[in-house]
Length: 270
Ligand SMILES: NC(=O)c1ccc[n+]([C@@H]2O[C@H](COP(=O)([O-])OP(=O)(O)OC[C@H]3O[C@@H](n4cnc5c(N)ncnc54)[C@H](O)[C@@H]3O)[C@@H](O)[C@H]2O)c1
Ligand SMILES: CCCCC[C@H](O)/C=C/[C@H]1C=CC(=O)[C@@H]1CCCCCCC(=O)O
Image (cartoon, rainbow, N blue to C red; front, top):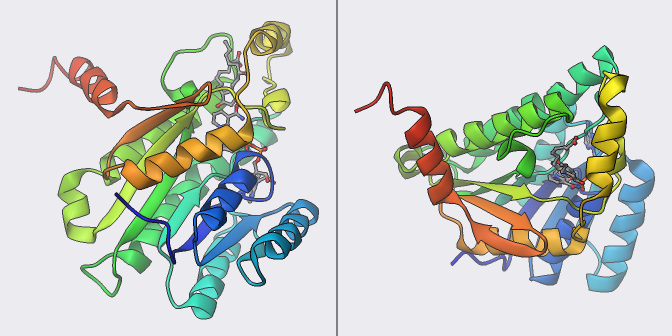
């Protein structure tokens, strides 16, 4: 079981929603320090102040950072390294869901996929035991959007969450983990009560009413219960494992993913 005690943690998109509760859950469980990387300065500084008042000065620090801009992302990693000497855990949580313009779609892919890949590669470079690191954990946030073919839906968002799942599972495989000592775990959340859900809007306005009514029919788990599920995955997950946090229940679904890929590849493997 992996412990949170004394860990230096980064949470991207940690100023609001599930990310903000993830920051608190790590601090509550004795992490040494959590760095919040987010573009939302108002919520970020407010959360930093609240958690430092509750848990002690210096436990949390907000860094204004657009994860889709490499200089800002890597700059924030380097500042955390300079201040704390190491990074043990990176939670790649930042994402957006609004795909109602071409420009918005490009940004969505940049944030949900490209930035998550860059952050994962940077974290592995820092933490890998076969270079100068001492190992660590990366948790990449996917969704039920990667597990089911939703239609009509926010198609690009769904595609980005599938990319997160496959990238994280491949790079997290035992063969690579045994070289790097860096666990890569994927967490798929089910519908959760945050600001992201009302912003699920497609560029094809003709399907938005159906998307909206499907979403409105869903029961939403709280952001806090989602974050508690993330902690369970952190504590118990092997590298390459996938965890579902749906309706406040946590289930390891690695064997389902493996079976699905066995089926998808059955005509070209053996
Ligand atoms: N809410 C759900 O139902 C749900 C379901 C499945 C998966 N997820 C996933 O959970 C994660 C958290 O989502 P949430 O629902 O808490 O969303 P949210 O909108 O409440 O929070 C997202 C955070 O990311 C930040 N962010 C956005 N763009 C950024 C950027 N370029 N750089 C840095 N920070 C940025 C936002 O400012 C915000 O603080 C996301 O990866 C999301 O895809 C959410
Ligand atoms: C049938 C609709 C079920 C989903 C409703 C729910 O409130 C939405 C949850 C999404 C929020 C963020 C995601 O990743 C979650 C998954 C999104 C996947 C698909 C979006 C569905 C749609 O756009 O109609």
